[in-house]
Image (tube, rainbow, N blue to C red):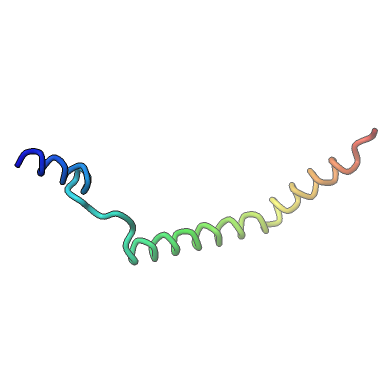
Length: 66
């Protein structure tokens, strides 16, 4: 009996065969969080201050004397 119980624990996992993956609601929350992060990142990157800084960096990189 002990061998069977031990084998079952090894096969099913130490937690007794808990959830193996995410549920649909967890995928939905992850997708919503990723979209919100993408929207905030897009707003930051397209802001005037960041766009000006990126243009300055690219401009300096293109005007490097050889």
